[in-house]
Each structure stands twice: as structure tokens, then as C-alpha cells.
Image 1 (tube, rainbow, N blue to C red):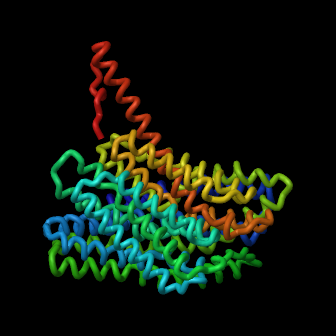
Image 2 (cartoon, rainbow, N blue to C red):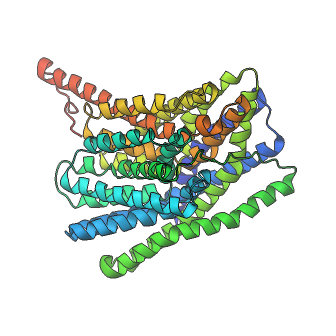
Image 3 (cartoon, rainbow, N blue to C red):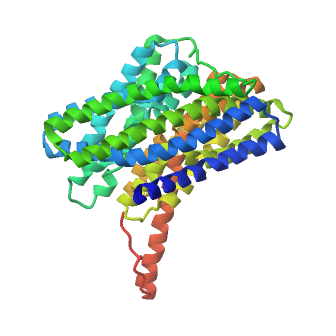
Length: 506
């Protein structure tokens, strides 16, 4: 009981540390720069409380259920030593997890010119195919950067074959689809598969699954854009929600709770069913372990319901309102520094970022700490939001950012340790989660409408930018690591000064 209480207190403290800075920034802006209506502010405050509670339960539940489930399934798949079985199960898992992802429903609504069912199934097939490719890469030892060059090359070729309004949304889809349901399970799956191997490259190949699975949705949406040839995306623009009194505020949240309870239940069911069948046929885990996983799934369910309700009902209208209010002022270029500061802190509130940072620290035995990972991600997201706000205000095409950005990211992969490349490309999908979709995207949409721009071409792309910049900042971290090790090595061999940390191989 004491251990459980201590764990809950730790998780709550982490959630508060993650959310309070964003809360403070919004309050400062609303009182010092632009006024925000009391209703929107109250809904934001209520949403912040739910987001904190949701993060606490989700991170605890993911550690108890999603992570061990993924590791057990991955290890058992590898033990089977049947390539055909691994291919079939990888494809099936990719389909199931993607269809289970709540953020995919949001993506489907953003592109009404394509039927929702066709979009969801096509994206799920894309993720399933790329999960197969990711698994085979781990087994065959194929360098990740070679695959990234090929598949992103194909994606950029396809970009010029679809309407301009589809370009930003296609790259947004890669970040949206790798959300809180997908990331913990897929990352744990990679650790489970790599754990069966006994070689020095295990740590390198434990990462990279999310990186490749993020490409599947991009290619799927681009292919659908060519097939349907829509003249415009018809993207849905979020509306500002005004709350007149406390009763209306309560009703807004109580009406949303049943919807998200049903949505998360439907999302979790396929994963639970798959794991249950796997347990009966192959795993045969002890009852004690199963009970712990079931308890973790309950925490995961509660956490996602709280988190998504708070983010969608509380954060979404606040983001829209704040963006439109700042952009409507004569000092609209304040949107860039405000967005930059919000971006720096908001990534800490992404539920899957916590899972990634601590898994990186564990796999690398502390050589890459969770704190350093957190700072690198925050810097990357801050830069991406700044660039996204410049796009909103100027209307610069997203291609001027994506093509150089991915060229730099893939170019860096030839100069840094492989593990940094794999972690960097995983982190792009992880950082662009529900907080980006429910606060930063509405912020950009509201600002774009107020500034007189086209929300379809200028506002969409925020998720894509957030997914891109960590690829660069994490690899720069790797480059710094290489240079530091080189200096330490020179210190040992040229000056003869002992240094236990002189040579560190990742």
C-alpha cells in the first residue's frame, strides 16, 4: 500500500510539473497581453486539472500494462523463429493498434472528402506494412537511415502529385496516428524483439519502430489524395466554445465524459482481445502477472478518458481563442515568441513523451538521461512552433520547411551513433501527440483565421513541424556526444590523464 501511494504521488508530481508551466503561460498571456473570456478560461482551468489527473493514471497504467504486454508479445514472436508468423502478427498488430488510436478519428474528420472508413482502413494497412518492415529491419540488421532515405524520398515525390491543401495534412497524419495508444505498445514491442538477441547492437535496434510506422500514414494519405483527386481538403475548422456560467461548464464536461468513455473502451478492446488470445495460445503468464496487467489497463483507461476529455473540451477552445485574440491585435508577431514558449513546455505534457524518455534512459543504462532527452525535445518543439507561427502569419509553403528539415535530419544520421538516429525519429512521432492536436493546432487555426490566411494550407502542418524538429535536435545531441567522447579519448591517449568515461560506445 505504501509503495502504491508513493508511486501515485510521484506520478502526480510529474504530471503537475508538466502541465503547470503551460497553465502559467496561458494565465500570463490572458492577463498581461490579450483578454480571454471568463468561460474559455474556466474551461481551460478545468481541462488542466483533468489533463494532470489523466497523465498520472496513464503513465502508471502504461508502465503496468502496455509496456509489459508489448515486451512479452515481441519476445514471444521472436522466439517462434518463423518469419511468416512474425510478418502476419506484425501486420495484424499494426492494423489493430492503429484502428484503436483515438487520434485517428480526429484525422478522419479533418479530411471529409475521403470517407472515414476508407481513410482509417488505408492508414491502418499502411502502419501494418511498415511495422512488418520495422520488424524485418531489426532481424536483418538493415541500417535505419537507408530505409528513411527511400521512404521519405517516395513521400516527397508523392507530395507534388496531390493538391496543395493535402500536403500539410498528409505529414500531420504521421504524427497524429502515433498517439498515446500506439506509442507505448510499439516501443515495448521493439524492446521485446531486441531482448531475444545477444549482440552489441541490441540497444540501437530497440528503437526505430515508431519512426517507420509514422511513415505509413503519410504515404497512405498521399495515395488517397491521388486516387480521390479532391479539389480541396474540406478540412474542419475548430470552433470557439463560449461558456456562459458554471452550470454550462459542468454540462460541457459531463456530456463529453460518456463519449470518451465509449471511445477509449472501443479503442482498448482490440488490444486486450489480441493479448488475451496470445496469452491463451502462447504466453501462459502467471495469474499474478495477469492481474497486474489488468489493473494497469484499468489505470490506462481512466487516464486516457480524463486526459482526452480535459484536452479536447478544455484546451481546444482555449487554443483557438488565444490564437485568434493574439493575431487580431496590432502586435500579432507576439504570436511567435508566445508560441515558442508554449511549445517548449507543452511537449512535457504529452503522455507518451514520459514513456519514451524513461525507456531511453533504461535501454542506454543512463548514458542518455530522461532529463537531457526532455530538454532536447522541448527545444525542438519550441523551434517547430516558432516556424509554424511564422507560416501562419506569412503563408509560406510548408515544403520550404519540410524538404530542408528532413534533408538535414537524414544527413545527420550519417554522422551520429545509430541509436541517436533511431531515438530521434521515434521522438518525432511521440512529441506530436494529443496535446499538439488539441492546443497547438487550434492555436494556429485561430490565429490563421484572425490574420486572414487560409487555415487549410497555412494552419495545418503544425503537427508535421512538431514531428520534424526533434529529429534534428536529438541528433545534434548525438553529435555533441560524439565530439565530447573524441575530446575525452584525446585527453587519455595524448595527455595520459585517466578518465573512466573516456570511451563510451552507444
